[in-house]
Length: 302
Ligand code: ADP
Image 1 (spheres, rainbow, N blue to C red):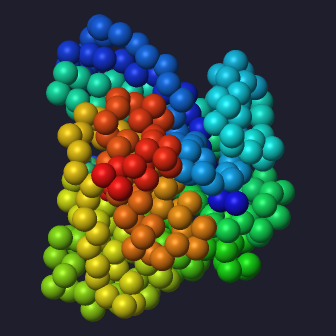
Image 2: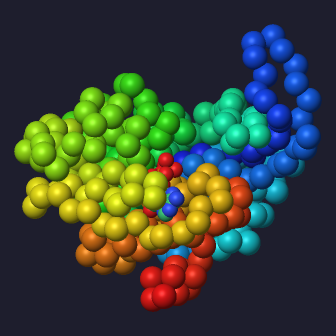
C-alpha cells in the first residue's frame, strides 16, 4: 500500500473582484466550501489511481471532521489511522480575485496534533508500506520521524516539500524521490533548475549532500526534469488547455507514487504523473479535478 502522512483542511474559498489591502474590507461574490489539504489531495490522487491508500493524519471533533472522514471513505481511502482530536479541523481561508491571484490563510487546527509521538503509534503501517508519500503541512518533527521509520525498513520515500520549511534537515534523512516545482527547487538548491542541463555535475553533488536519490522538477506545461546519478532526463508534458492548475502538483505526486509502489520504472512513473497532472488542470478545484486511472490511461493512449 501507499502510506500518506499529511494534512486535511476544509477550504473556504471567497471570490472577490480584488484582494483586500491591509485594514480594508471587500465583499465577495460567493463563498465555496471544499475538501483540501495537500495530504488528503495526494492520498486521493493515489486512490483514484488504484493504490490501496492509508492516510495518517488528524481531524477535529467537529462536523467538518466527520464530513471529511466520510468523504475519504467514499473514495476508498483507509482512514483507520486518521485520528479525531479535540478542537477544529484544519482550515484554509482562500481569497481569489478576478485574475486568479490569491491570498491564503491556513489554520492548522487538528493537523498540528499529528505530533511525532502520535505518528510513532502508526509505525507498523509505515514499515510495511510499498511507498511513503509526504508533504510539509504537518509538524516538521513528524515528517522527519516518518522518513526515519521508512528509512529503517528501506521503504521508498517520496517527499513533496511544500510549503517549504527553512529548517528541514537535508542530509540527515534519506529521500528516495524529491518532487518540487521550479520555485521550490530554487529555494532548496539556491539555483535555477532551468540551467540544470549545463550544470548536471553540480546538481548531482547537491543531491548527494542532501541524501536525495532522484530529483523531479515539475514545470507546469513544460517538460518535467528528472535527475538521478545516471544523469538528466526530460519527460514531455501532456498537452491540454488548462482551466485551473490548482491541484496539479498534488495529482502528479499521488499518481507518481502509485506507479512507483507498483514497481514501474522511474520514467514510466513520470509519464503517468505528467498525464494525470495535466488532466487535473481541466476542472476548477483541487480534488474535483483529480482524474481516475482509466482516464489517464485513455489520455496516454490517445
Ligand atoms: P505546482 O502546482 O506544484 O506548481 P506544476 O504547475 O509544475 O506544479 O504542475 C505539476 C504537474 O502538473 C506538471 O509537471 C505537469 O505534469 C502537470 N501540469 C500542470 N499544469 C499543466 C499544463 N498547463 N499543461 C500540462 N500539464 C500541466
